[in-house]
Length: 327
Image (cartoon, rainbow, N blue to C red):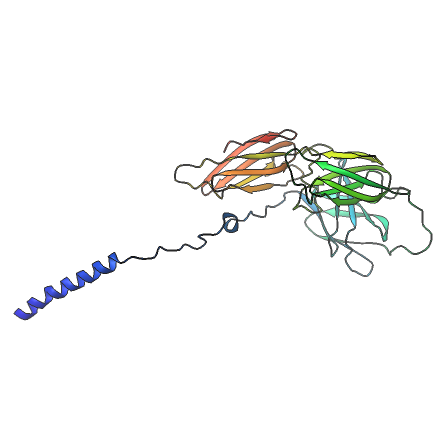
C-alpha cells in the first residue's frame, strides 16, 4: 500500500507535465475557408429581380426554328420599347404595363409584321411569316452611313457600349428603315452602315446589359427617348447619366467591406412601383468605398445592407451628377 501511495503522485505529476507540454506546443493557425480570396469572389453581386411586367418568349420561323437578330418594337403610353432576339430567338422586353400589346417584328429576311401579344409572366412564341421571295419588292431609300460618337464626361473607356436605333415611323410605312445597333470603341466612336434616312429613337446602354432597355444613358428615368434625324454630317451623343458614390462608415466592430448597395427608382418596391422596376447594384471595397455608375437622372432610393445593418437614403440624380447617399 505504501508503494502505491508513492507511485500515484508521480503518475499524476507525469500526466500534468504531459498536458502542459501539449498546451504549450506551437500550433498552426486555423485557416478559415475563403481566406486569401479576393472579396468579390466571396461576395458576388446578387441577381436582382426586375419588378416590371415583361414581354418574353421566342421569335420563330415557320419551321419552328429560332430567329436571331429580329427586332421587337412596342409603343405603350407614348413610350417606345424595343429589343432584339438572341441566338435561339429568345427575347425579354421589360418595363411594360400588363395587358394586350401590338408588337412590330422586323428582320431583313422576313416581311415586317405586326402581331398582338400579352405582357405578363407567361413566355410566348411569335411566329414570323415565310421569308422574302426573290420576286419584286418595294425598294427602300438609299442608305447613308452614320459615323457618330458617344461622349461621357466621367467615363474614359467607352469600349462595348451598345447604341440602339429604332425608326419613329411605323414599320409598315413605305420607306421606313430597320432598327439597327452598333458598339462603341474605346473613344466612343461607332458606325452604322447604310442607315435609311429618317427620324430615329436612340439609346446608349452600358456593357453588361445587351439588348436591354435600361439604363439608357441618354435620357432621364422619366424622360422621353432621345430622337435625331438622319442623315447628319457629324453627330455626338452626350450621356446624361450620373454616379452614386460614397463611403460606408459602419458601427464599431463591423467590417466596412462587402456591404451590398442598391439603387432603385423611388417606389420600385411598393404597390405603385415605377414602370421600369430596375435596380443597379454594387458592393463596398475593403475601406468601405463604393461607386455605382450609369445612373440616369431621376428620383431614387439608395439602400445599404451589411449584416444586421440596414441604411436607406433618398436622392435625386441630376444630369451628369455625382451624389453621396451619406452611408
